[in-house]
Amino acid sequence: MTSLSVEMLAADAVEPITSAGNAQLGIAVLAGIAVIVLLITKLKMHAFLALTIGSLALGSFAGANPAKTITSFTAGLGSTVAGVGVLIALGAILGKLLADSGGADQIVDTILAKASGRAMPWAMVLIASIIGLPLFFEVGIVLMIPVVLLVAKRGNYSLMRIGIPALAGLSVMHGLIPPHPGPLVAIDALGANLGVTLALGVLVAIPTVIIAGPLFSRYAARWVDIEAPEKMIPQRPSEDLDRRPSFGATLATILLPVVLMLVKALVDIVVDDPENHVQRVTDVIGSPLIALLAAVIVGMFTLGRAAGFTKGRLSSTVEKSLAPIAGILLIVGAGGGFKQTLIDAGVGQMILDFSENWSIPALLLGWLIAVAIRLATGSATVATISAAGLVAPLAADLSTSHVALLVLAVGAGSLFFSHVNDAGFWLVKEYFGMDVPQTIKTWSVMETIISVVALGFIMLLSLVL
Image 1 (spheres, rainbow, N blue to C red):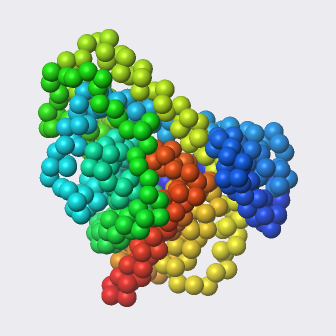
Image 2: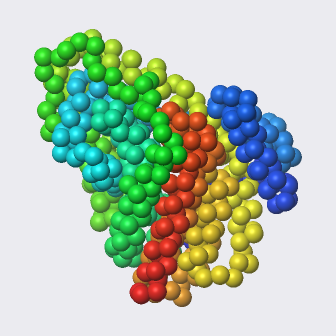
Image 3: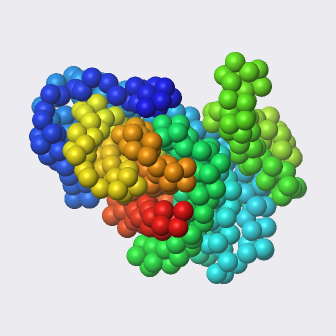
Protein backbone atom coordinates (compact mmCIF):
# COMPACT_ATOMS: atom_id res chain seq x y z
CA MET A 1 0.00 0.00 0.00
CA THR A 2 1.31 3.46 -0.80
CA SER A 3 2.13 6.16 1.71
CA LEU A 4 -0.94 8.25 0.79
CA SER A 5 -3.39 5.46 1.51
CA VAL A 6 -1.52 4.47 4.65
CA GLU A 7 -1.79 8.02 5.98
CA MET A 8 -5.52 8.21 5.29
CA LEU A 9 -6.14 4.80 6.84
CA ALA A 10 -4.17 5.83 9.90
CA ALA A 11 -6.49 8.78 10.35
CA ASP A 12 -9.43 6.45 10.76
CA ALA A 13 -7.75 3.41 12.29
CA VAL A 14 -7.22 3.68 16.04
CA GLU A 15 -6.87 1.12 18.80
CA PRO A 16 -10.22 -0.74 18.93
CA ILE A 17 -12.40 0.26 21.86
CA THR A 18 -13.41 -3.37 22.41
CA SER A 19 -11.71 -6.78 22.39
CA ALA A 20 -14.88 -8.55 21.27
CA GLY A 21 -14.58 -11.32 18.71
CA ASN A 22 -15.90 -10.93 15.19
CA ALA A 23 -19.13 -12.79 15.96
CA GLN A 24 -19.99 -10.58 18.95
CA LEU A 25 -19.00 -7.47 17.03
CA GLY A 26 -21.18 -8.43 14.08
CA ILE A 27 -24.17 -8.94 16.40
CA ALA A 28 -23.43 -5.60 18.10
CA VAL A 29 -23.46 -3.79 14.74
CA LEU A 30 -26.83 -5.26 13.79
CA ALA A 31 -28.24 -4.51 17.25
CA GLY A 32 -27.02 -0.89 17.19
CA ILE A 33 -28.59 -0.26 13.78
CA ALA A 34 -31.82 -1.97 14.87
CA VAL A 35 -32.04 0.28 17.95
CA ILE A 36 -31.71 3.42 15.81
CA VAL A 37 -34.32 2.30 13.29
CA LEU A 38 -36.81 1.24 15.96
CA LEU A 39 -36.42 4.44 17.99
CA ILE A 40 -37.04 6.60 14.92
CA THR A 41 -39.77 4.61 13.17
CA LYS A 42 -41.71 3.14 16.12
CA LEU A 43 -41.17 5.61 18.94
CA LYS A 44 -40.87 8.66 16.65
CA MET A 45 -37.76 9.78 18.52
CA HIS A 46 -35.70 12.61 17.06
CA ALA A 47 -32.88 11.24 14.90
CA PHE A 48 -30.18 13.02 16.93
CA LEU A 49 -31.26 11.26 20.14
CA ALA A 50 -31.75 7.93 18.36
CA LEU A 51 -28.26 8.01 16.87
CA THR A 52 -26.75 8.91 20.23
CA ILE A 53 -28.56 6.07 22.02
CA GLY A 54 -27.79 3.66 19.17
CA SER A 55 -24.08 4.42 19.44
CA LEU A 56 -24.12 3.72 23.18
CA ALA A 57 -26.09 0.52 22.57
CA LEU A 58 -23.54 -0.61 19.98
CA GLY A 59 -20.71 -0.11 22.44
CA SER A 60 -22.58 -1.97 25.18
CA PHE A 61 -23.40 -4.96 22.94
CA ALA A 62 -19.75 -5.08 21.83
CA GLY A 63 -18.53 -5.06 25.44
CA ALA A 64 -16.70 -1.75 25.10
CA ASN A 65 -15.88 0.53 28.02
CA PRO A 66 -18.72 3.12 28.12
CA ALA A 67 -16.21 5.96 28.48
CA LYS A 68 -14.40 4.87 25.30
CA THR A 69 -17.69 4.58 23.44
CA ILE A 70 -18.63 8.10 24.45
CA THR A 71 -15.20 9.36 23.39
CA SER A 72 -15.53 7.72 19.96
CA PHE A 73 -19.02 9.10 19.44
CA THR A 74 -18.15 12.64 20.47
CA ALA A 75 -14.95 12.59 18.40
CA GLY A 76 -16.90 11.48 15.33
CA LEU A 77 -19.62 14.05 15.96
CA GLY A 78 -17.05 16.80 16.41
CA SER A 79 -15.02 15.95 13.30
CA THR A 80 -18.16 15.68 11.17
CA VAL A 81 -19.56 19.02 12.33
CA ALA A 82 -16.12 20.63 11.97
CA GLY A 83 -15.90 19.45 8.38
CA VAL A 84 -19.35 18.97 6.89
CA GLY A 85 -21.03 21.35 9.37
CA VAL A 86 -19.03 24.36 8.25
CA LEU A 87 -19.79 23.55 4.61
CA ILE A 88 -23.51 23.26 5.39
CA ALA A 89 -23.44 26.62 7.17
CA LEU A 90 -21.64 28.36 4.30
CA GLY A 91 -24.00 26.70 1.84
CA ALA A 92 -26.98 27.94 3.83
CA ILE A 93 -25.65 31.51 3.75
CA LEU A 94 -25.06 31.31 0.00
CA GLY A 95 -28.52 29.81 -0.49
CA LYS A 96 -30.15 32.60 1.52
CA LEU A 97 -28.27 35.22 -0.51
CA LEU A 98 -29.47 33.52 -3.69
CA ALA A 99 -33.05 33.52 -2.45
CA ASP A 100 -33.29 37.00 -0.95
CA SER A 101 -31.53 38.72 -3.85
CA GLY A 102 -33.70 37.03 -6.47
CA GLY A 103 -30.69 35.17 -7.89
CA ALA A 104 -32.24 31.76 -7.28
CA ASP A 105 -35.40 32.91 -9.06
CA GLN A 106 -33.25 34.02 -11.98
CA ILE A 107 -31.56 30.62 -12.24
CA VAL A 108 -34.79 28.66 -11.87
CA ASP A 109 -36.70 30.83 -14.32
CA THR A 110 -33.95 30.34 -16.89
CA ILE A 111 -33.88 26.55 -16.37
CA LEU A 112 -37.65 26.29 -16.59
CA ALA A 113 -37.63 28.36 -19.78
CA LYS A 114 -34.96 26.20 -21.44
CA ALA A 115 -36.05 22.75 -20.20
CA SER A 116 -39.47 21.55 -19.21
CA GLY A 117 -41.55 18.41 -18.91
CA ARG A 118 -39.62 15.23 -19.66
CA ALA A 119 -36.39 17.12 -20.27
CA MET A 120 -36.19 18.50 -16.73
CA PRO A 121 -34.75 15.38 -14.98
CA TRP A 122 -32.11 15.16 -17.71
CA ALA A 123 -31.24 18.81 -17.25
CA MET A 124 -30.87 18.31 -13.50
CA VAL A 125 -28.58 15.29 -13.84
CA LEU A 126 -26.40 17.18 -16.31
CA ILE A 127 -26.15 20.24 -14.05
CA ALA A 128 -25.38 18.10 -10.97
CA SER A 129 -22.74 16.07 -12.83
CA ILE A 130 -20.95 19.21 -13.97
CA ILE A 131 -21.12 20.83 -10.54
CA GLY A 132 -20.18 17.57 -8.81
CA LEU A 133 -17.08 16.90 -10.92
CA PRO A 134 -14.58 18.60 -8.57
CA LEU A 135 -16.75 18.90 -5.43
CA PHE A 136 -17.17 16.78 -2.35
CA PHE A 137 -20.66 15.30 -2.24
CA GLU A 138 -21.68 17.47 0.71
CA VAL A 139 -20.59 20.67 -1.04
CA GLY A 140 -22.50 19.68 -4.16
CA ILE A 141 -25.60 19.05 -2.06
CA VAL A 142 -25.60 22.47 -0.43
CA LEU A 143 -25.09 24.17 -3.79
CA MET A 144 -27.80 22.16 -5.59
CA ILE A 145 -30.49 22.10 -2.91
CA PRO A 146 -31.90 25.62 -3.50
CA VAL A 147 -32.14 24.98 -7.24
CA VAL A 148 -33.68 21.50 -6.84
CA LEU A 149 -36.31 22.63 -4.35
CA LEU A 150 -37.26 25.74 -6.30
CA VAL A 151 -37.49 23.90 -9.63
CA ALA A 152 -39.70 21.23 -8.04
CA LYS A 153 -41.93 23.85 -6.40
CA ARG A 154 -42.13 26.36 -9.24
CA GLY A 155 -42.49 23.75 -11.99
CA ASN A 156 -44.94 21.62 -9.97
CA TYR A 157 -42.71 18.53 -10.27
CA SER A 158 -42.47 15.62 -7.87
CA LEU A 159 -39.50 16.29 -5.60
CA MET A 160 -38.10 12.82 -6.33
CA ARG A 161 -38.40 13.34 -10.09
CA ILE A 162 -36.07 16.33 -9.81
CA GLY A 163 -34.03 15.43 -6.72
CA ILE A 164 -32.98 11.87 -7.59
CA PRO A 165 -31.26 12.83 -10.88
CA ALA A 166 -29.37 15.59 -9.07
CA LEU A 167 -28.28 13.22 -6.28
CA ALA A 168 -27.28 10.57 -8.82
CA GLY A 169 -25.11 13.03 -10.72
CA LEU A 170 -23.31 14.09 -7.55
CA SER A 171 -22.90 10.55 -6.21
CA VAL A 172 -21.56 8.98 -9.42
CA MET A 173 -18.95 11.71 -9.74
CA HIS A 174 -17.99 11.21 -6.08
CA GLY A 175 -17.47 7.46 -6.36
CA LEU A 176 -16.07 6.90 -9.85
CA ILE A 177 -14.39 9.97 -11.30
CA PRO A 178 -11.05 11.45 -10.29
CA PRO A 179 -10.11 13.99 -8.94
CA HIS A 180 -12.41 12.98 -6.08
CA PRO A 181 -10.40 11.78 -3.05
CA GLY A 182 -11.66 8.16 -3.05
CA PRO A 183 -10.79 7.35 -6.67
CA LEU A 184 -7.47 9.23 -6.38
CA VAL A 185 -6.41 7.21 -3.32
CA ALA A 186 -7.44 3.95 -5.01
CA ILE A 187 -5.45 4.94 -8.13
CA ASP A 188 -2.44 5.61 -5.92
CA ALA A 189 -2.81 2.39 -3.93
CA LEU A 190 -3.22 0.17 -6.99
CA GLY A 191 -0.71 1.96 -9.20
CA ALA A 192 -3.36 2.64 -11.85
CA ASN A 193 -2.95 5.03 -14.77
CA LEU A 194 -4.88 8.23 -14.03
CA GLY A 195 -5.77 8.97 -17.65
CA VAL A 196 -7.00 5.44 -18.38
CA THR A 197 -9.00 5.37 -15.14
CA LEU A 198 -10.58 8.73 -15.93
CA ALA A 199 -11.52 7.65 -19.47
CA LEU A 200 -13.01 4.32 -18.37
CA GLY A 201 -14.68 6.04 -15.41
CA VAL A 202 -16.52 8.38 -17.77
CA LEU A 203 -17.59 5.41 -19.93
CA VAL A 204 -19.04 3.69 -16.86
CA ALA A 205 -20.46 6.86 -15.30
CA ILE A 206 -22.59 8.00 -18.26
CA PRO A 207 -24.93 4.97 -18.53
CA THR A 208 -24.87 4.49 -14.75
CA VAL A 209 -26.06 8.01 -13.98
CA ILE A 210 -28.76 7.77 -16.67
CA ILE A 211 -30.19 4.58 -15.16
CA ALA A 212 -29.88 5.64 -11.51
CA GLY A 213 -30.97 9.23 -12.19
CA PRO A 214 -33.66 10.14 -14.74
CA LEU A 215 -34.86 6.56 -15.28
CA PHE A 216 -35.04 5.47 -11.64
CA SER A 217 -36.58 8.79 -10.62
CA ARG A 218 -39.80 7.74 -12.39
CA TYR A 219 -40.24 4.89 -9.93
CA ALA A 220 -38.93 6.83 -6.93
CA ALA A 221 -41.56 9.50 -7.59
CA ARG A 222 -44.29 6.84 -7.46
CA TRP A 223 -42.96 5.21 -4.30
CA VAL A 224 -42.43 8.49 -2.45
CA ASP A 225 -44.73 11.19 -3.78
CA ILE A 226 -43.82 14.23 -1.71
CA GLU A 227 -43.53 17.94 -2.29
CA ALA A 228 -40.52 20.09 -1.51
CA PRO A 229 -40.52 20.85 2.25
CA GLU A 230 -41.61 24.45 2.81
CA LYS A 231 -39.07 25.07 5.57
CA MET A 232 -36.19 24.23 3.23
CA ILE A 233 -37.40 26.10 0.13
CA PRO A 234 -35.61 29.41 -0.40
CA GLN A 235 -38.34 31.98 0.12
CA ARG A 236 -38.93 34.94 -2.17
CA PRO A 237 -37.99 38.27 -0.64
CA SER A 238 -40.77 39.72 1.50
CA GLU A 239 -40.67 42.95 -0.51
CA ASP A 240 -40.42 43.47 -4.24
CA LEU A 241 -36.90 44.29 -5.33
CA ASP A 242 -36.21 47.04 -7.82
CA ARG A 243 -33.63 44.83 -9.47
CA ARG A 244 -32.13 41.40 -9.16
CA PRO A 245 -28.77 39.87 -10.17
CA SER A 246 -28.23 38.86 -13.77
CA PHE A 247 -28.23 35.18 -14.74
CA GLY A 248 -24.53 35.37 -15.64
CA ALA A 249 -23.50 36.90 -12.31
CA THR A 250 -25.58 34.42 -10.34
CA LEU A 251 -24.25 31.43 -12.28
CA ALA A 252 -20.67 32.65 -11.91
CA THR A 253 -21.13 32.94 -8.14
CA ILE A 254 -22.50 29.41 -7.85
CA LEU A 255 -19.73 27.99 -10.03
CA LEU A 256 -16.91 29.84 -8.26
CA PRO A 257 -16.22 27.07 -5.71
CA VAL A 258 -16.49 24.49 -8.51
CA VAL A 259 -13.82 26.30 -10.51
CA LEU A 260 -11.53 26.80 -7.51
CA MET A 261 -11.69 23.10 -6.55
CA LEU A 262 -11.21 21.98 -10.14
CA VAL A 263 -8.13 24.20 -10.47
CA LYS A 264 -6.71 22.68 -7.29
CA ALA A 265 -7.35 19.15 -8.55
CA LEU A 266 -5.73 19.83 -11.93
CA VAL A 267 -2.67 21.48 -10.35
CA ASP A 268 -2.30 18.53 -7.95
CA ILE A 269 -2.29 16.16 -10.93
CA VAL A 270 -0.03 18.19 -13.25
CA VAL A 271 2.45 19.62 -10.74
CA ASP A 272 2.37 16.96 -7.99
CA ASP A 273 4.96 18.77 -5.85
CA PRO A 274 3.84 19.81 -2.34
CA GLU A 275 6.71 22.33 -2.19
CA ASN A 276 5.70 24.06 -5.42
CA HIS A 277 4.44 27.60 -4.73
CA VAL A 278 1.56 27.37 -7.19
CA GLN A 279 0.34 24.09 -5.73
CA ARG A 280 0.58 25.44 -2.19
CA VAL A 281 -1.62 28.38 -3.18
CA THR A 282 -4.20 26.25 -5.00
CA ASP A 283 -4.27 23.79 -2.09
CA VAL A 284 -5.54 26.66 0.06
CA ILE A 285 -7.95 28.41 -2.30
CA GLY A 286 -9.25 25.10 -3.63
CA SER A 287 -10.07 23.58 -0.24
CA PRO A 288 -13.85 23.18 0.26
CA LEU A 289 -14.01 25.64 3.16
CA ILE A 290 -12.09 28.43 1.42
CA ALA A 291 -13.83 27.85 -1.92
CA LEU A 292 -17.30 28.14 -0.39
CA LEU A 293 -16.25 31.03 1.85
CA ALA A 294 -15.00 32.86 -1.25
CA ALA A 295 -18.34 32.24 -2.96
CA VAL A 296 -20.20 33.68 0.04
CA ILE A 297 -18.04 36.82 0.14
CA VAL A 298 -18.29 37.32 -3.63
CA GLY A 299 -22.03 36.64 -3.42
CA MET A 300 -22.48 39.52 -1.00
CA PHE A 301 -21.48 41.82 -3.87
CA THR A 302 -22.67 39.96 -7.01
CA LEU A 303 -25.99 39.01 -5.40
CA GLY A 304 -26.70 41.16 -2.34
CA ARG A 305 -25.32 44.51 -3.45
CA ALA A 306 -26.55 43.91 -6.99
CA ALA A 307 -30.07 43.65 -5.57
CA GLY A 308 -29.61 46.89 -3.61
CA PHE A 309 -28.98 45.34 -0.18
CA THR A 310 -27.59 47.60 2.52
CA LYS A 311 -24.91 46.40 4.93
CA GLY A 312 -27.59 45.87 7.55
CA ARG A 313 -29.69 43.80 5.16
CA LEU A 314 -26.69 41.61 4.29
CA SER A 315 -26.00 41.02 7.99
CA SER A 316 -29.65 40.13 8.58
CA THR A 317 -29.64 37.70 5.66
CA VAL A 318 -26.62 35.86 7.03
CA GLU A 319 -28.13 35.68 10.52
CA LYS A 320 -31.46 34.33 9.29
CA SER A 321 -29.79 31.67 7.13
CA LEU A 322 -28.24 29.80 10.06
CA ALA A 323 -31.21 29.12 12.35
CA PRO A 324 -33.03 26.58 10.09
CA ILE A 325 -29.97 24.32 9.77
CA ALA A 326 -29.36 23.72 13.50
CA GLY A 327 -31.31 20.45 13.49
CA ILE A 328 -29.58 19.25 10.34
CA LEU A 329 -26.14 19.91 11.82
CA LEU A 330 -26.95 17.90 14.95
CA ILE A 331 -28.38 14.96 13.01
CA VAL A 332 -25.54 14.82 10.49
CA GLY A 333 -23.02 15.18 13.32
CA ALA A 334 -24.62 12.32 15.26
CA GLY A 335 -24.50 10.20 12.10
CA GLY A 336 -20.77 10.88 11.96
CA GLY A 337 -20.51 9.94 15.63
CA PHE A 338 -22.21 6.60 15.03
CA LYS A 339 -19.94 5.94 12.04
CA GLN A 340 -16.83 6.66 14.14
CA THR A 341 -18.06 4.34 16.89
CA LEU A 342 -18.35 1.57 14.31
CA ILE A 343 -14.86 2.23 12.98
CA ASP A 344 -13.28 2.44 16.45
CA ALA A 345 -14.98 -0.81 17.44
CA GLY A 346 -12.97 -2.53 14.72
CA VAL A 347 -15.74 -3.23 12.22
CA GLY A 348 -13.53 -2.43 9.22
CA GLN A 349 -10.90 -4.91 10.37
CA MET A 350 -13.63 -7.50 10.99
CA ILE A 351 -14.68 -7.25 7.35
CA LEU A 352 -11.07 -7.51 6.16
CA ASP A 353 -10.58 -10.64 8.31
CA PHE A 354 -13.63 -12.29 6.78
CA SER A 355 -12.54 -11.46 3.23
CA GLU A 356 -8.95 -12.71 3.38
CA ASN A 357 -9.76 -16.16 2.04
CA TRP A 358 -12.33 -15.21 -0.62
CA SER A 359 -11.26 -16.94 -3.86
CA ILE A 360 -13.08 -14.90 -6.49
CA PRO A 361 -12.08 -12.67 -9.46
CA ALA A 362 -10.19 -9.52 -8.54
CA LEU A 363 -12.81 -7.07 -9.83
CA LEU A 364 -15.63 -8.77 -7.96
CA LEU A 365 -13.48 -9.19 -4.85
CA GLY A 366 -12.67 -5.47 -4.74
CA TRP A 367 -16.35 -4.59 -5.15
CA LEU A 368 -17.54 -7.04 -2.47
CA ILE A 369 -14.98 -5.91 0.11
CA ALA A 370 -15.89 -2.27 -0.48
CA VAL A 371 -19.61 -3.14 -0.19
CA ALA A 372 -19.09 -4.95 3.11
CA ILE A 373 -17.07 -2.12 4.64
CA ARG A 374 -19.52 0.49 3.34
CA LEU A 375 -22.48 -1.37 4.89
CA ALA A 376 -20.69 -1.81 8.19
CA THR A 377 -19.09 1.62 8.64
CA GLY A 378 -21.20 3.92 6.44
CA SER A 379 -18.08 5.59 5.06
CA ALA A 380 -17.47 5.47 1.30
CA THR A 381 -13.94 6.81 1.76
CA VAL A 382 -13.00 4.20 4.39
CA ALA A 383 -14.49 1.49 2.15
CA THR A 384 -12.50 2.66 -0.87
CA ILE A 385 -9.19 2.97 0.97
CA SER A 386 -9.51 -0.34 2.84
CA ALA A 387 -10.65 -2.36 -0.17
CA ALA A 388 -8.00 -0.86 -2.45
CA GLY A 389 -5.31 -1.68 0.08
CA LEU A 390 -6.47 -5.28 0.41
CA VAL A 391 -6.61 -6.04 -3.32
CA ALA A 392 -3.47 -4.03 -4.20
CA PRO A 393 -1.27 -7.16 -4.52
CA LEU A 394 -3.63 -8.49 -7.21
CA ALA A 395 -3.03 -5.42 -9.38
CA ALA A 396 0.53 -6.58 -10.17
CA ASP A 397 -0.81 -9.34 -12.41
CA LEU A 398 -3.39 -7.21 -14.24
CA SER A 399 -3.15 -5.18 -17.44
CA THR A 400 -3.25 -1.38 -17.35
CA SER A 401 -6.92 -1.28 -18.31
CA HIS A 402 -7.88 -3.95 -15.78
CA VAL A 403 -6.08 -2.13 -12.96
CA ALA A 404 -8.14 0.95 -13.84
CA LEU A 405 -11.30 -1.20 -13.82
CA LEU A 406 -10.31 -2.52 -10.38
CA VAL A 407 -10.17 1.08 -9.11
CA LEU A 408 -13.67 1.66 -10.51
CA ALA A 409 -14.98 -1.61 -9.01
CA VAL A 410 -13.79 -0.53 -5.56
CA GLY A 411 -15.33 2.91 -6.04
CA ALA A 412 -18.63 1.38 -7.15
CA GLY A 413 -18.73 -0.90 -4.12
CA SER A 414 -18.12 2.01 -1.77
CA LEU A 415 -21.46 3.57 -2.82
CA PHE A 416 -23.63 0.53 -2.04
CA PHE A 417 -26.80 1.04 0.07
CA SER A 418 -26.24 4.11 2.21
CA HIS A 419 -28.26 3.76 5.43
CA VAL A 420 -28.47 5.01 9.00
CA ASN A 421 -24.73 4.81 9.73
CA ASP A 422 -23.93 7.23 6.89
CA ALA A 423 -23.98 10.97 7.59
CA GLY A 424 -24.97 11.50 3.94
CA PHE A 425 -28.16 9.52 4.55
CA TRP A 426 -29.26 12.03 7.19
CA LEU A 427 -28.19 14.98 5.06
CA VAL A 428 -30.47 13.87 2.21
CA LYS A 429 -33.29 12.92 4.58
CA GLU A 430 -33.40 16.32 6.26
CA TYR A 431 -32.95 18.45 3.15
CA PHE A 432 -35.72 16.60 1.32
CA GLY A 433 -38.04 16.37 4.32
CA MET A 434 -38.40 12.58 4.24
CA ASP A 435 -38.73 9.99 7.01
CA VAL A 436 -36.38 7.00 7.33
CA PRO A 437 -38.43 4.51 5.24
CA GLN A 438 -38.88 7.09 2.47
CA THR A 439 -35.16 7.85 2.44
CA ILE A 440 -34.36 4.14 2.15
CA LYS A 441 -36.85 3.70 -0.74
CA THR A 442 -35.29 6.55 -2.67
CA TRP A 443 -31.77 7.55 -1.69
CA SER A 444 -30.58 4.13 -0.43
CA VAL A 445 -32.04 2.30 -3.42
CA MET A 446 -30.53 4.87 -5.80
CA GLU A 447 -27.09 4.36 -4.27
CA THR A 448 -27.48 0.59 -4.63
CA ILE A 449 -28.50 0.94 -8.28
CA ILE A 450 -25.41 3.07 -8.94
CA SER A 451 -23.18 0.47 -7.29
CA VAL A 452 -24.65 -2.58 -9.03
CA VAL A 453 -25.11 -1.00 -12.48
CA ALA A 454 -21.57 0.41 -12.42
CA LEU A 455 -20.23 -3.05 -11.53
CA GLY A 456 -22.18 -4.53 -14.44
CA PHE A 457 -20.63 -2.12 -16.93
CA ILE A 458 -17.18 -2.63 -15.38
CA MET A 459 -17.47 -6.40 -15.84
CA LEU A 460 -18.63 -5.91 -19.45
CA LEU A 461 -15.64 -3.70 -20.18
CA SER A 462 -13.34 -6.31 -18.63
CA LEU A 463 -14.50 -8.79 -21.29
CA VAL A 464 -13.53 -6.56 -24.22
CA LEU A 465 -10.38 -4.83 -22.92
